[in-house]
Length: 391
Image (cartoon, rainbow, N blue to C red; front, side, top):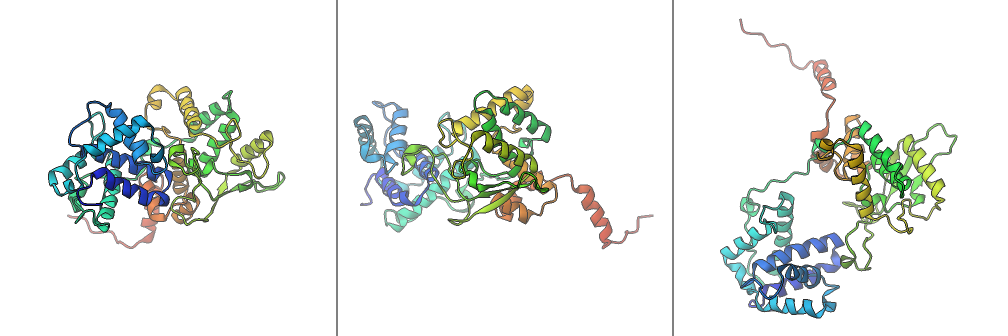
């Protein structure tokens, strides 16, 4: 590939080189970034094609290694037009063109600024692609700005907003409403209860098998159960997986392949899961939480049930607030409670599948209720004598 090659060709080479190394969500995110970048480097905007169709052709076909060879005729026509009307790779040597691309990545389709995390992700993906182009001698140097200019002052945080946390009364009302839901209510109740009491990620819960749950004997004094978490099945879309399935099976996030973790489950969860397994007549090898056709529980079903419960149970102003807006907020609630209950961060991190630094960076702002105890400890330490007061 020469230096005069159109920019999309370099993008396709990069996608194909990385494809087999990436999970579905990473593939999808790269396609989104390169689609916006390609459109920003067109000599002229399309008039004979709907702009939406151009974006779809690039995102869903051109930058999808598996689907590209099977692109329908109308998509191929769009992609040929894009290639003819794209600036050469040498356009990256023009600082104004680079600024134009970055501005496009920082802006939503409606013209409003993109979320900080979205801008940061776009720039990170593009930076990796530029480094690849340099190594392949497609570019002389990485044209993207460095240091402070690289993020244009964009600040992002992983810290959890305390407003998203759910108190016990709200959790009981939400889970109670879900249990009474006519269609799959009991099954979904057990799913949400597992998230609330043990704090796993949603993609980890849907991957669990019955054999991954250790239930104590019915007459045992200690009724805590234990969950073995070892697999995740995120929902990424069938066009981004190698199997053509909506979900893909992955090892645990941030962990080595084959790594596992165990999490204790409150006796209340023990009762819920025991009843769930018995009523569903599940076998050890079965999925613990199944869809209506015995397959993986769909994310759309989970999200719809949770939203319906919030709307039915919460006051309008609470429903519109961040409180429990996402299913993932059940995980945030549990991990925060463990920390507030005085469980050592190293132990919480182990149960959560995080590192201690990541755990504290996410939840430090949510840890409260311990100030009085901390004050008593400081006073008891006695390392400072009372200073004399001024006359």
